Amino acid sequence: MQHVTIKDIARLSGVSVATVSRALNDASEISEDTRDRVLRICREQGYRTNLLARSLISSRTNVLGLILPDISNPFHTALSLSIETCAREQGYQVMLCSGRPGDGKIEGLFEFLIGQRVDGVLLSSASDQARELLHRYQDTLPAVLLGACAPEASGIRINSVSTDNFVGGRMAAEYLYTLGHREVFYLGLRPGSATHTLRHLGFCTAARELGLAVRTVENPTSASTISSGYQMARSVLEQPFSQTAVFAASDAVALGMIQVADELGIPIPERLSVLGFDNIEYAALPNIRLSTLSHNSPTMARAAVHLLLELIDSDSRGEYTTKFITPTLIRRATCRTI
Image (cartoon, rainbow, N blue to C red; front, top):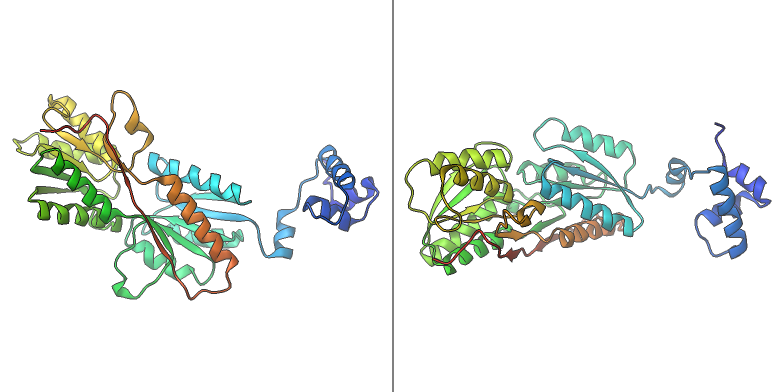
Protein backbone atom coordinates (compact mmCIF):
# COMPACT_ATOMS: atom_id res chain seq x y z
CA MET A 1 0.00 0.00 0.00
CA GLN A 2 1.42 3.38 -1.00
CA HIS A 3 2.25 5.69 1.88
CA VAL A 4 -0.01 8.76 1.91
CA THR A 5 1.89 12.00 2.56
CA ILE A 6 0.77 15.42 3.70
CA LYS A 7 1.45 16.66 0.15
CA ASP A 8 -1.05 14.10 -1.19
CA ILE A 9 -3.68 15.35 1.26
CA ALA A 10 -3.00 18.96 0.22
CA ARG A 11 -3.40 18.07 -3.47
CA LEU A 12 -6.64 16.13 -2.92
CA SER A 13 -8.06 18.89 -0.70
CA GLY A 14 -7.07 21.70 -3.05
CA VAL A 15 -5.20 23.56 -0.29
CA SER A 16 -1.61 24.20 0.68
CA VAL A 17 0.55 21.91 2.85
CA ALA A 18 0.51 24.64 5.49
CA THR A 19 -3.31 24.57 5.56
CA VAL A 20 -3.30 20.78 6.01
CA SER A 21 -0.86 21.17 8.88
CA ARG A 22 -3.08 23.80 10.50
CA ALA A 23 -6.11 21.49 10.17
CA LEU A 24 -4.25 18.59 11.77
CA ASN A 25 -3.10 20.80 14.64
CA ASP A 26 -6.57 22.36 15.12
CA ALA A 27 -5.18 25.83 14.49
CA SER A 28 -7.58 28.76 14.47
CA GLU A 29 -6.28 30.38 11.24
CA ILE A 30 -8.52 28.28 8.94
CA SER A 31 -12.27 27.98 8.61
CA GLU A 32 -14.23 25.14 10.15
CA ASP A 33 -15.41 23.99 6.70
CA THR A 34 -11.82 23.74 5.43
CA ARG A 35 -10.73 21.88 8.56
CA ASP A 36 -13.59 19.39 8.27
CA ARG A 37 -12.87 18.79 4.56
CA VAL A 38 -9.16 18.18 5.17
CA LEU A 39 -9.77 15.84 8.10
CA ARG A 40 -12.39 13.91 6.10
CA ILE A 41 -9.94 13.34 3.26
CA CYS A 42 -7.27 12.29 5.79
CA ARG A 43 -9.63 9.63 7.12
CA GLU A 44 -10.64 8.46 3.65
CA GLN A 45 -7.02 8.16 2.52
CA GLY A 46 -5.78 6.55 5.73
CA TYR A 47 -3.33 9.36 6.45
CA ARG A 48 -1.41 9.12 9.72
CA THR A 49 0.57 11.97 11.26
CA ASN A 50 4.32 11.34 11.17
CA LEU A 51 5.01 11.67 14.88
CA LEU A 52 8.77 11.33 14.42
CA ALA A 53 8.86 14.20 11.92
CA ARG A 54 6.67 16.30 14.20
CA SER A 55 8.95 15.58 17.16
CA LEU A 56 12.02 16.68 15.20
CA ILE A 57 10.33 20.01 14.51
CA SER A 58 8.78 20.62 17.94
CA SER A 59 11.34 18.73 20.12
CA ARG A 60 8.33 16.98 21.68
CA THR A 61 6.85 13.53 21.11
CA ASN A 62 4.05 13.81 23.68
CA VAL A 63 5.10 10.37 24.94
CA LEU A 64 6.05 9.57 28.55
CA GLY A 65 8.08 6.55 29.61
CA LEU A 66 6.85 4.49 32.57
CA ILE A 67 9.08 1.88 34.21
CA LEU A 68 7.39 -0.50 36.66
CA PRO A 69 9.12 -3.20 38.74
CA ASP A 70 6.44 -5.87 38.17
CA ILE A 71 3.48 -5.35 35.86
CA SER A 72 1.87 -8.56 37.17
CA ASN A 73 1.55 -7.01 40.63
CA PRO A 74 -2.08 -5.80 41.00
CA PHE A 75 -0.95 -2.57 42.66
CA HIS A 76 1.33 -1.67 39.74
CA THR A 77 -1.34 -2.65 37.23
CA ALA A 78 -3.83 -0.23 38.82
CA LEU A 79 -1.17 2.48 39.12
CA SER A 80 -0.20 2.20 35.44
CA LEU A 81 -3.86 2.48 34.38
CA SER A 82 -4.28 5.64 36.47
CA ILE A 83 -1.09 7.12 35.00
CA GLU A 84 -2.16 6.32 31.45
CA THR A 85 -5.61 7.86 32.02
CA CYS A 86 -4.17 11.06 33.46
CA ALA A 87 -1.50 11.33 30.75
CA ARG A 88 -4.08 10.90 28.00
CA GLU A 89 -6.18 13.69 29.50
CA GLN A 90 -3.13 15.94 29.10
CA GLY A 91 -2.52 14.87 25.49
CA TYR A 92 0.24 12.35 26.19
CA GLN A 93 0.68 8.64 25.48
CA VAL A 94 2.59 6.25 27.77
CA MET A 95 5.31 3.79 26.79
CA LEU A 96 5.35 1.01 29.43
CA CYS A 97 8.48 -0.93 30.41
CA SER A 98 9.23 -3.38 33.22
CA GLY A 99 12.44 -3.57 35.25
CA ARG A 100 13.96 -3.22 38.72
CA PRO A 101 17.04 -1.24 39.83
CA GLY A 102 19.82 -3.77 40.27
CA ASP A 103 18.46 -6.33 37.80
CA GLY A 104 20.87 -5.25 35.06
CA LYS A 105 18.05 -4.17 32.74
CA ILE A 106 16.79 -0.84 33.97
CA GLU A 107 19.76 1.23 32.79
CA GLY A 108 19.15 -0.19 29.33
CA LEU A 109 15.47 0.79 29.61
CA PHE A 110 16.44 4.40 30.37
CA GLU A 111 18.74 4.41 27.33
CA PHE A 112 15.96 2.88 25.22
CA LEU A 113 13.42 5.50 26.32
CA ILE A 114 15.91 8.31 25.68
CA GLY A 115 16.50 6.84 22.21
CA GLN A 116 12.72 6.86 21.64
CA ARG A 117 12.76 10.60 22.43
CA VAL A 118 10.20 10.38 25.25
CA ASP A 119 9.55 13.74 26.87
CA GLY A 120 10.04 12.39 30.40
CA VAL A 121 10.18 9.24 32.52
CA LEU A 122 8.28 7.99 35.56
CA LEU A 123 10.12 5.29 37.52
CA SER A 124 8.09 3.30 40.05
CA SER A 125 10.36 1.58 42.55
CA ALA A 126 10.74 0.87 46.25
CA SER A 127 14.45 0.08 45.91
CA ASP A 128 17.09 2.18 47.68
CA GLN A 129 19.05 2.11 44.40
CA ALA A 130 16.30 3.95 42.53
CA ARG A 131 17.31 7.34 43.97
CA GLU A 132 20.86 7.15 42.65
CA LEU A 133 19.69 5.78 39.31
CA LEU A 134 17.19 8.60 38.77
CA HIS A 135 19.77 11.18 39.82
CA ARG A 136 22.11 9.83 37.14
CA TYR A 137 19.60 10.44 34.35
CA GLN A 138 17.62 13.48 35.47
CA ASP A 139 20.06 15.91 33.82
CA THR A 140 19.40 14.14 30.50
CA LEU A 141 15.61 14.20 30.64
CA PRO A 142 12.87 15.12 33.14
CA ALA A 143 12.23 12.23 35.53
CA VAL A 144 10.09 11.53 38.61
CA LEU A 145 10.35 8.68 41.10
CA LEU A 146 7.09 7.06 42.13
CA GLY A 147 8.13 5.58 45.43
CA ALA A 148 9.61 6.28 48.84
CA CYS A 149 12.81 8.26 49.08
CA ALA A 150 15.54 7.40 51.55
CA PRO A 151 16.85 10.23 53.76
CA GLU A 152 18.87 12.82 51.84
CA ALA A 153 22.06 12.35 53.86
CA SER A 154 23.87 11.46 50.63
CA GLY A 155 23.04 14.87 49.19
CA ILE A 156 21.27 13.28 46.21
CA ARG A 157 18.15 15.26 45.32
CA ILE A 158 15.43 14.04 42.98
CA ASN A 159 11.80 14.74 42.15
CA SER A 160 9.45 12.21 43.70
CA VAL A 161 5.84 11.40 44.55
CA SER A 162 5.15 8.83 47.24
CA THR A 163 2.65 7.45 49.66
CA ASP A 164 3.58 8.72 53.12
CA ASN A 165 4.69 5.29 54.28
CA PHE A 166 5.85 6.46 57.71
CA VAL A 167 2.40 7.92 58.41
CA GLY A 168 0.78 4.79 56.96
CA GLY A 169 2.76 2.61 59.35
CA ARG A 170 1.67 4.77 62.27
CA MET A 171 -1.96 4.57 61.16
CA ALA A 172 -1.76 0.75 61.07
CA ALA A 173 -0.34 0.50 64.61
CA GLU A 174 -2.84 2.97 66.00
CA TYR A 175 -5.77 1.15 64.38
CA LEU A 176 -4.76 -2.27 65.74
CA TYR A 177 -4.21 -0.72 69.17
CA THR A 178 -7.69 0.84 69.21
CA LEU A 179 -9.12 -2.62 68.46
CA GLY A 180 -7.52 -3.90 71.67
CA HIS A 181 -4.50 -5.74 70.24
CA ARG A 182 -1.31 -5.60 72.32
CA GLU A 183 0.92 -8.21 70.64
CA VAL A 184 1.24 -8.16 66.84
CA PHE A 185 3.30 -9.43 63.92
CA TYR A 186 4.83 -7.11 61.36
CA LEU A 187 5.07 -9.44 58.37
CA GLY A 188 7.27 -8.73 55.39
CA LEU A 189 9.96 -6.13 56.16
CA ARG A 190 12.35 -5.80 53.19
CA PRO A 191 15.43 -3.97 54.53
CA GLY A 192 16.56 -2.99 51.01
CA SER A 193 13.30 -1.17 50.30
CA ALA A 194 12.87 2.48 51.30
CA THR A 195 9.10 1.99 51.17
CA HIS A 196 9.10 -0.91 53.61
CA THR A 197 11.78 0.59 55.84
CA LEU A 198 9.69 3.75 56.33
CA ARG A 199 6.47 1.77 56.75
CA HIS A 200 8.08 -0.44 59.41
CA LEU A 201 9.66 2.56 61.15
CA GLY A 202 6.30 4.35 61.36
CA PHE A 203 4.61 1.22 62.69
CA CYS A 204 7.26 0.52 65.34
CA THR A 205 7.49 4.17 66.41
CA ALA A 206 3.76 4.30 67.13
CA ALA A 207 3.89 0.85 68.73
CA ARG A 208 6.55 1.98 71.21
CA GLU A 209 4.50 5.06 72.12
CA LEU A 210 1.38 2.94 72.65
CA GLY A 211 3.02 -0.01 74.42
CA LEU A 212 2.32 -2.40 71.54
CA ALA A 213 4.70 -5.40 71.34
CA VAL A 214 5.87 -6.07 67.75
CA ARG A 215 7.50 -9.21 66.36
CA THR A 216 9.01 -8.36 62.97
CA VAL A 217 9.33 -11.06 60.32
CA GLU A 218 11.69 -10.10 57.48
CA ASN A 219 10.99 -10.97 53.86
CA PRO A 220 13.92 -13.06 52.53
CA THR A 221 12.93 -12.42 48.89
CA SER A 222 13.17 -9.31 46.70
CA ALA A 223 9.41 -8.90 46.18
CA SER A 224 6.27 -8.68 48.31
CA THR A 225 4.20 -11.46 46.76
CA ILE A 226 1.55 -13.96 47.84
CA SER A 227 4.24 -16.64 47.67
CA SER A 228 6.63 -14.78 49.98
CA GLY A 229 3.74 -14.02 52.36
CA TYR A 230 2.85 -17.70 52.39
CA GLN A 231 6.44 -18.73 53.22
CA MET A 232 6.78 -16.17 56.02
CA ALA A 233 3.40 -17.07 57.50
CA ARG A 234 4.29 -20.77 57.52
CA SER A 235 7.48 -19.99 59.45
CA VAL A 236 5.56 -18.32 62.32
CA LEU A 237 2.07 -19.84 62.37
CA GLU A 238 3.22 -23.46 62.50
CA GLN A 239 4.74 -22.65 65.91
CA PRO A 240 2.87 -21.55 69.05
CA PHE A 241 2.30 -17.77 69.03
CA SER A 242 0.68 -15.23 71.32
CA GLN A 243 0.12 -12.44 68.80
CA THR A 244 -3.50 -11.55 68.02
CA ALA A 245 -2.98 -9.44 64.88
CA VAL A 246 -0.80 -9.15 61.78
CA PHE A 247 0.18 -6.04 59.88
CA ALA A 248 1.34 -7.27 56.48
CA ALA A 249 3.72 -5.09 54.46
CA SER A 250 1.47 -5.48 51.41
CA ASP A 251 -1.91 -6.93 50.49
CA ALA A 252 -0.18 -9.70 48.54
CA VAL A 253 1.73 -10.72 51.67
CA ALA A 254 -1.55 -10.58 53.63
CA LEU A 255 -3.20 -12.91 51.11
CA GLY A 256 -0.37 -15.42 51.60
CA MET A 257 -0.90 -15.17 55.35
CA ILE A 258 -4.65 -15.76 55.00
CA GLN A 259 -4.01 -18.86 52.88
CA VAL A 260 -1.73 -20.38 55.55
CA ALA A 261 -4.19 -19.53 58.33
CA ASP A 262 -6.93 -21.31 56.40
CA GLU A 263 -4.76 -24.39 55.89
CA LEU A 264 -3.85 -24.50 59.59
CA GLY A 265 -7.40 -23.92 60.82
CA ILE A 266 -6.63 -20.51 62.34
CA PRO A 267 -9.84 -18.44 62.06
CA ILE A 268 -9.57 -14.85 60.80
CA PRO A 269 -10.37 -12.52 62.46
CA GLU A 270 -11.55 -14.55 65.48
CA ARG A 271 -8.03 -15.74 66.40
CA LEU A 272 -5.89 -13.46 64.23
CA SER A 273 -6.75 -10.08 62.75
CA VAL A 274 -5.01 -9.26 59.44
CA LEU A 275 -4.34 -5.75 58.10
CA GLY A 276 -2.74 -5.21 54.70
CA PHE A 277 -1.38 -2.27 52.72
CA ASP A 278 -2.09 -1.36 49.04
CA ASN A 279 -5.87 -1.90 48.65
CA ILE A 280 -5.42 -3.99 45.51
CA GLU A 281 -8.53 -5.05 43.62
CA TYR A 282 -8.48 -8.58 45.08
CA ALA A 283 -8.67 -7.19 48.63
CA ALA A 284 -12.34 -6.26 48.22
CA LEU A 285 -13.52 -9.64 46.91
CA PRO A 286 -16.50 -10.99 48.94
CA ASN A 287 -14.64 -14.05 50.26
CA ILE A 288 -11.61 -11.97 51.33
CA ARG A 289 -12.74 -8.45 52.37
CA LEU A 290 -9.25 -7.56 53.57
CA SER A 291 -8.86 -4.58 55.89
CA THR A 292 -6.06 -2.48 54.43
CA LEU A 293 -4.55 0.94 53.81
CA SER A 294 -5.01 2.52 50.39
CA HIS A 295 -2.30 4.44 48.56
CA ASN A 296 -4.99 6.50 46.81
CA SER A 297 -3.37 5.45 43.52
CA PRO A 298 -5.37 7.80 41.25
CA THR A 299 -4.30 10.77 43.39
CA MET A 300 -0.68 9.61 43.40
CA ALA A 301 -0.68 8.98 39.65
CA ARG A 302 -2.17 12.40 38.93
CA ALA A 303 0.38 14.13 41.17
CA ALA A 304 3.26 12.29 39.47
CA VAL A 305 2.07 13.03 35.92
CA HIS A 306 1.46 16.71 36.67
CA LEU A 307 4.86 17.05 38.35
CA LEU A 308 6.57 15.44 35.36
CA LEU A 309 4.74 17.73 32.92
CA GLU A 310 5.79 20.74 34.99
CA LEU A 311 9.40 19.59 34.69
CA ILE A 312 9.03 19.08 30.93
CA ASP A 313 7.67 22.63 30.53
CA SER A 314 10.28 24.16 32.84
CA ASP A 315 13.70 25.40 31.80
CA SER A 316 15.02 25.12 35.35
CA ARG A 317 16.69 21.95 36.62
CA GLY A 318 17.77 23.39 39.97
CA GLU A 319 14.56 22.93 41.95
CA TYR A 320 13.32 19.59 43.30
CA THR A 321 9.90 18.58 44.59
CA THR A 322 8.92 15.79 46.97
CA LYS A 323 5.19 15.13 47.32
CA PHE A 324 3.62 12.82 49.90
CA ILE A 325 0.14 11.31 49.60
CA THR A 326 -1.52 10.35 52.90
CA PRO A 327 -2.95 6.79 52.81
CA THR A 328 -6.54 5.98 53.74
CA LEU A 329 -7.62 3.24 56.17
CA ILE A 330 -10.12 0.81 54.59
CA ARG A 331 -12.06 -1.11 57.26
CA ARG A 332 -13.36 -4.49 56.11
CA ALA A 333 -13.79 -7.95 57.63
CA THR A 334 -10.31 -9.25 58.57
CA CYS A 335 -9.82 -7.14 61.71
CA ARG A 336 -11.95 -7.21 64.87
CA THR A 337 -12.09 -5.73 68.34
CA ILE A 338 -10.88 -8.01 71.13
